[in-house]
Image (cartoon, rainbow, N blue to C red; front, side, top):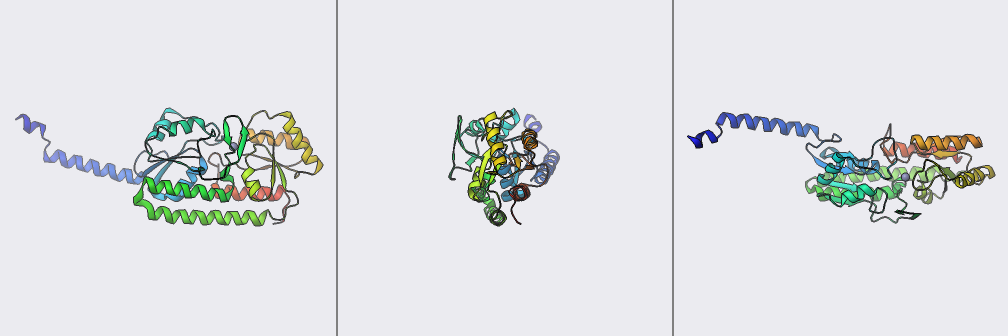
Length: 306
Ligand SMILES: [Zn+2]
């Protein structure tokens, strides 16, 4: 009798099977949603450009969680307990590198059980000259270096989910074509500008400036500061007043960046123009459309014929 009560009846098995099928269907339906623990290849990205690349290349096979919240810069992103658990159990973890850009995320990545990819590992990085930050991290703002990031993300997806290889390679190629077109638009659009030096708030555009023959003069450093040094503000003001830099202040798209940029621009009487750093998810559009909007801002501020 004991063995008979321990064995589930055929009816109970049928019910359980039905429930499992239903759960399976629900999981499939959830693929592609952010923050979803259900179904698909689970990717955790340390900040927006890596999440964008994973979504573009991963398509509907992946669910992507971006660890950096909207409206902030990605430097020193901190982790909640839930985010840390997600990172430790994800199929694929994407970080920029291990050089002090996001120290808490970088440390947590070393405890992750899935595939971990440092997407900037193979790129030629510029030393930062700042304490606790080995290199200038802002590689994603150069469309050509972003192509290298997309290749690393695609490679990571193939390693984490070999069955999805053909789709990943197909979407990788399409994303690379978009970035090549973006690079072409920058080359053409910035070829004949009246000014070639730009004053920025957060000094995030060094790689972009080097790519297209521009010079960047940052009011803040490679790491955003709420109270920039008076000497740096003065140097920027002098460069604009003397005509060495374009008559505009480009500000990063955080509340703090806007405040600093608009205040310096108002003091000199020049326009403040937005230049998104893409360090967190944009309020509208995506990586490509913000980069196109940045090009328009640069063409306006540097006075480039379009
Ligand atoms: Zn930055």
